[in-house]
Image 1: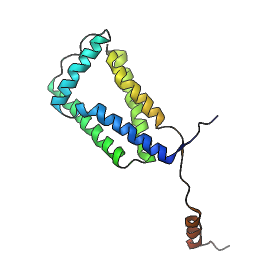
Image 2 (image 1 turned 180 degrees about the vertical axis):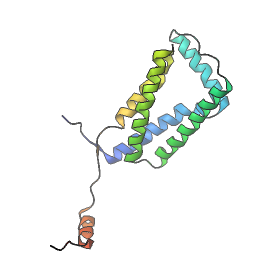
Image 3 (image 1 turned 120 degrees about the horizontal axis):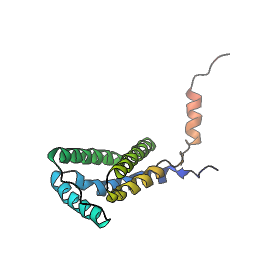
Image 4 (image 1 turned 90 degrees about the vertical axis):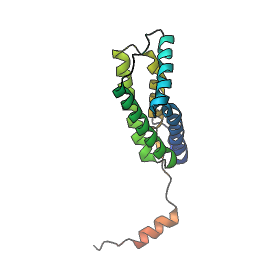
Length: 154
């Protein structure tokens, strides 16, 4: 049984909501100073889940984390200011790929705090894969386009 299609305007609101979520979640990754504060909290969260503290970060790790944060914030801004079906579908694919890598990291390392990142990726990725009912063109516009199009001669 097919899933009911989401109205196009609702889908655009969904894309904006996922972008707002990303903005809040990823903003601390954007600078070395905010990431240092976040990393300490993530380490405490990992310990709270019963695992070891996270390892110390080197400069190269910090650089990669802040590059990722900056890139995701740029992508988030695009979806927030100009949401579209195409961007939503690309974002869904990216999220599901991210979920695979987060799941892989959870398998090879003792980092249960990654559930905090994994669950939203799966949720937003699946939500943005939902079928969408595209708005239909107004009847008058379709008629004008048909009249203006050249007709093939038999």
